[in-house]
Length: 314
Ligand code: UT7
Image (cartoon, rainbow, N blue to C red; front, top):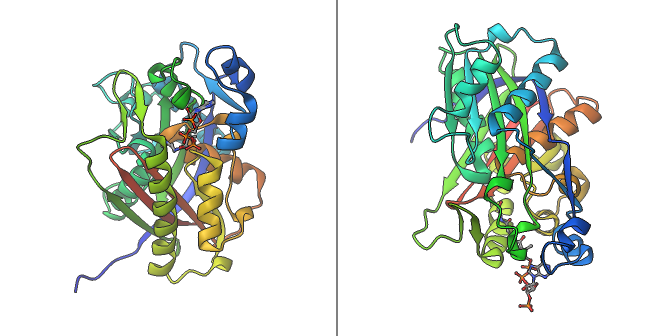
């Protein structure tokens, strides 16, 4: 049997950036045949932020800067930049390379690339960063989730346009000799008949995704807890991908975990894809006292289909 080595990584700082433009349910009532009542009761969303000229890399950079400033972190220590995104500025170069340049780190030895696992991207990128830090070559990883979904949102389709928003979140991880176990579970079920796709515009089969999401949220959280011998009391917070409040509530009910353990901010930002987990995590870290050595669980799902969960130690 293969021996499984737990990763060891330290969460040094977090940050986020959301654009100032607000698109409310009332604004959407003027664009498509919908209502604040329908949107809020079916999704939990009231407003979302929309970029006004800011590129994904600009938002990613500002989220990174927030994380750097909050910890008074020496940016020159960063030797790995990973950006989870499916809405990069260009097909190439990566958003990660743009962030390196914007941070003034272009003359330094930094590995930079993007990770595309759609809305699961930040869980995937956190795993890649952690494995690379534990590989011994890298010591400081800037992991970002950043998206400009408004560029791909069809504002004539009421079934999708009410859901999505823009933003970015960042996390700095370091390799450490302290005992800070981390573990990751990633999975996918590639589809030929795409139930969610971002091409020119976002198209999806909402009901199918909804059912899939509830199932994989429950299974992924259960798996990461079981594999690491975690009880509910070991967990400080669960940060779910913010796609629909009802999906989170249903998963919490099936898991018999108090909904209060889940950090939820979907009301303000809607679904920001790979950015939703790091934005929510930064809000949580900024608001709550750090429960040293307790666990944080990220859980996500998205196009692919992809899903996964991460366990980190505070
Ligand atoms: O990051 C992954 C991204 N995707 C997701 O997370 C999507 C997961 N799915 C969902 O969140 C939900 O399925 C939706 C919020 C998209 C839709 O909620 P639902 O309760 O599954 O509604 P539905 O699609 O079954 O539609 C129910 C009704 C339909 O009308 P009829 O056929 O019953 O007359 C829709 O046409 O609601 C109608 N409808 C709307 N009505 C007012 C759909 N969108 C809207 C709208 N405003 N915006």
